[in-house]
Amino acid sequence: MSGLDINAITKAFGNFIAVDNVRLNVPHGTFVCLLGPSGCGKTTLLRMIAGLEEPTSGAIVLDGEDITPLPTHKRNLGMVFQSLALFPHLSVGDNIAYALRIRGASKEEQKKRVDELLTLIHLPGFADRPVAKLSGGQRQRVAIARALALSPKLFLLDEPLSALDAKLREAMQVELRQLQQRLGITTIVVTHDQREAMTMADLVVVMGHGRILQAAPPIEIYRKPADAFVADFIGITNLLPAEVDSAGRTTILGTAIPGLAMPAGVTRASVSIRPEDVHLGQPGSRAITGQVTFVRDLGGTIETFVEVGSTSIIAVATPRERPNVSVGAKVGVTLPPESCVVLGS
Amino acid sequence: MRREAPKSFADYTPLLFPGLMLVVFFVVPFSTMIAVSFFKRNPAGFYTPDFVIDNYARFLTTFFAGVLGFSLMLAVLVAVCCVSIAFPFTYLLTKRSRRAQTLWLVGLLSVLSLSEVIIGFAWSTLFSQTAGITNLFVALGLMDKPVALLPTFGAVLAGMIYQALPYTILVLYPALVRLDPTLLEAARTLGASPVKAFFNVVTPALRNTIVATLIMVFVFALGSYLLPQILGRPRHWTLSVLITDQAIYQSNMPFAAAMAVFLVLISLALVGLTLLVGRRENAL
Image (tube, rainbow over all chains, first blue to last red; front, top):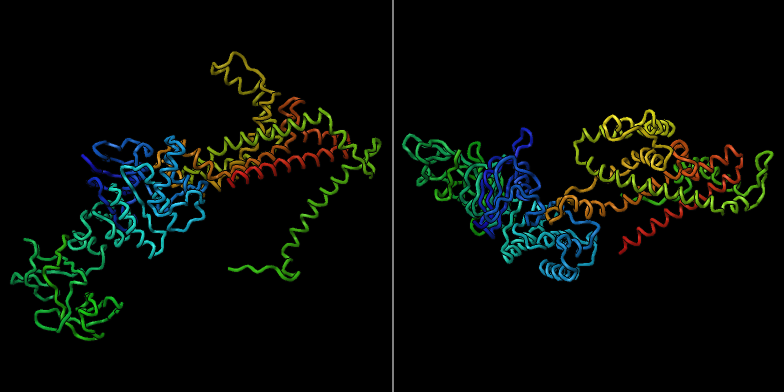
């Protein structure tokens, strides 16, 4: 079978279980983002795929071959480290050619491949520069080129863009995604930045406490989060308590939401609704009544904070969609049932 | 933070104390030694102020050239052996737990507290026929009968390496601890086995540290004069031994001073040459 199969991988450091029985199938050519807060086990999982950590149990299968017992240098993969780990004593060209030199490739072959890769990363003619003379973004690209020198089966990146400033990071996200699509290489990126994951990934894997909480395409993760942790981690969301009242209707904050059904047998649950799906209007019997406590006008979007009892609801709209509401005003909050996601406990 | 260049004389006052110490304990004795090396020896007494180059001329014999050559060779050999043992050792040490590292370093530091005399006699016992390690080999069935391993060149070398090794490790340790461990991991993901990666990533990345350590151990070993006497034959004696002999037992201070000055100049020249070669290779 083509692709990467992570088969019930567990990693324990003493009593601490960093990765807990993780199963994941990554089809060939997929761009995967392992996403989660620090300490969730995502880097450990990546390092096990690379062979830099040995799993306590489980197997890693690449294109039908069990690579778990193989040492790192026999796995045919490219990896970009958070620190980039460029060899300080080598020039840009020698850094990129390192893997080829290890394999005993001829000088001409090395030079040809280095020139090819430098063109790919838009740094032609940089081969003879020392790595210390490069800017942050250039070093980033050189690290990527070095990892791709042998056209590996698997491309792994550990928080590769975290050292760059916000603007450059966004540009590199797009560039990395385009590069991956051009090469069609199976890629796994570890990140804690949900925006980065949304930009680049075919498949977002949200991890927490060593487990996979949800693995799905980015838009599905955003629209249909599996639980409160995922909903809260990916973007901004409103988590509201929902109950089934005596008449059998689902209510949120005391107001019935017609059309919102709870799973059978469940009477209380959390509901996630994205701020852009929350509608604000005049107070009325069919809407939840609340008071505006703060308005953040960011120019492109307006965030309105509405307090209902002790619960705060955030609504986001463009200036065109919503007339200005002022702090202190009473508003009616409408939650379209099709945008509400009832979360598992 | 911007540092301002010192302007008035008062700004230099913090340098006064170290400057004074340097003059009193280095510049004055060293100048005296250079001066004495040109004085004339007085066989009846000590020496008389003069300006003769006899002391240096006497030096130009095959005997002294041989001793100088041997001293330099021994120091180079000790430096190379120490660094080749200490570098992999220290590298592996930095991979151990903090506790293990501390224990090893404390152990090594305790070796530094031993004087050269104690080290010399300890090794001479260890290499002796009656109580030495060969008795252990005999007990293990590896040898037929115990033999004396000294006085030999090997015994001198072993003693001097033992003495210099803790210094070597302590000098290498900070640089190796600071080395980014992902450099080695990166090399492994690029297809280098751990051993290969150690030689073509870790070692070149720490080139300057290695060169500096070699020079330090070389200079350290050059000054050794007790161990060659305790563990070696007279032909294993270094120039430092001859200097001591001339200065203390022959009372020929001018000749001893001349040899000392010459040794310093040769060492400086070698160190300079090493740095020069290092810089040229770095520029490539």
